[in-house]
Image (tube, rainbow, N blue to C red; front, top):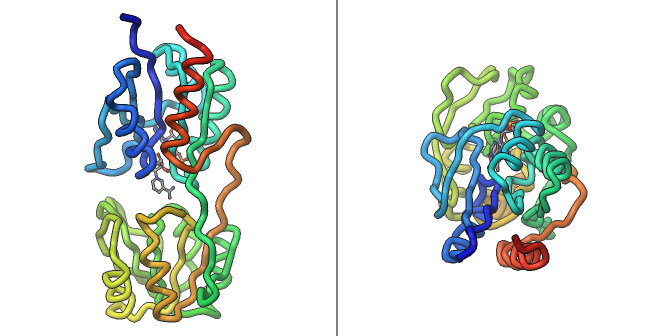
Length: 254
Ligand SMILES: NC(=O)c1ccc[n+]([C@@H]2O[C@H](COP(=O)([O-])OP(=O)(O)OC[C@H]3O[C@@H](n4cnc5c(N)ncnc54)[C@H](OP(=O)(O)O)[C@@H]3O)[C@@H](O)[C@H]2O)c1
C-alpha cells in the first residue's frame, strides 16, 4: 500500500478539530494538527498533534519541506493574522497547495447596537461615550490600548489565568472557556453590571452567546473589524475543506 499523504492543519479552532475528525478515518492520510501552544490544556483533535511556533514563514516553509507535507489547511482563527500570512508565504515558497478554512462573520440583527471599529485603539476612543463597566472576552491581545482609561473597569475573560498582571488600571479576570449559553452570558453581564462589550467578530456558534445576551439586555458591542485574510482559495465549512483536500490529492497523486 502507498505511504499515507501528510496533511497539516493549522488549528486552534472548533473548525480545525471538526476537519481533523472528518479526516481521521482515512487510511490514505496522516493528519497533523498544529497548535500555537498558548493554551495550557487545549482540546485535542484526533490525529497527530504538534505544538509551538515554527519560527516565522521561513520556519514553516522548512517544516513543510522536511515533513513532506502534501497539503496545508489554514484553519486558524479569523484574527490570527500573523500565522495566516506566514502560511500563505510558506506554502507558496514550498509549492504546497494551501486552503483557508474561514468561518463567516456574524451579521448584525436589527436590535443589535454594534459600533464597528478598526482595532482596539479605535475601541478605546469610543468607550467613554458608551459605558464605564466593560466586558472583554477576546483575550489579552491588544488590551494595552485601554491602559489610559482610568475611569473604566474591565472584566476580562481568559481561558488560563494570566501569568503577569494585565496592563489595565482597574480590572478583574473571570476564567472560562466557550461555549456558554445565552442565559449564562446574560447572568454574567447583569451580575457584573456591564454597560458595554468589546468583541471580535469571530463568527461561528461557540462564542456567539455573549452577542445574543448583549442584544437581549440592550447593551452596545464595540465590534473589532476582522483583518483581511491572505488571498487564495477559501472555504467556510469543514466539509468543503475535506472535499478540496480529496480533489487536491487526486489531482496530484504520489
Ligand atoms: N486570535 C484569536 O482571537 C484566537 C481565538 C481563538 C483561537 N486562536 C488560535 O490561537 C492561536 C494563536 O492565535 P494568535 O492570534 O496569537 O496568532 P498569530 O498572532 O497569528 O500568531 C502568532 C504566532 O504564533 C504562532 N502560531 C499561531 N498559530 C499557530 C499554530 N496553529 N501552529 C503553530 N504556531 C502558531 C506563530 O509563531 P511562529 O511565527 O514562530 O511560527 C505565529 O507567528 C492560533 O492558532 C489561533 O487559531 C486565536
